[in-house]
Length: 176
Image (cartoon, rainbow, N blue to C red; front, side, top):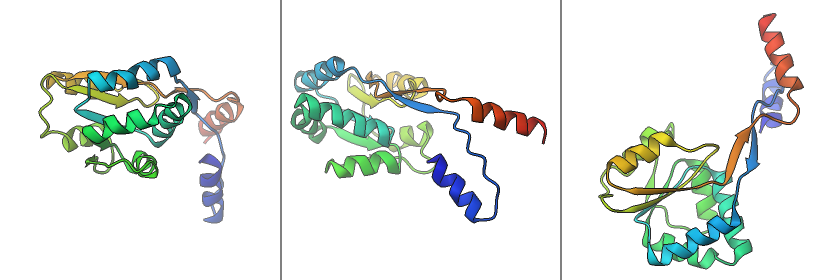
């Protein structure tokens, strides 16, 4: 949304310099997602945590292509579904998924853990929709409560293809 933010700054009288510093690259392994969704029938999760809207949509797009969305929705219907913020909430609502727990602002790992703190996770399977990298803090906290955590990679972070604007921004900052 960098272009929109730059436009907003300009409309407010500021001078915007658009320099993307991050790119989201698809990181979906359709076969791994197929195995995971099929395993949910025999090893149902107690908790499924959705951390991002982009990742949630990408995951459902993949289950659509695989013809497994019905099975995935059935598994979610039997689990506690947690959304980390408004973006995964919107993506889940678009799929008519019931959301049982929502993280409070500012939608960090701390608030996500707070939202599920009362759940007994001893011996439970927990599925976490990964954002750009593994959420080690979340995984370890859930594992410390006795859960077996499986992360679903959906995208990863990278530098943008064109880093020239970013280099120019840093140079401008150095020159004040």
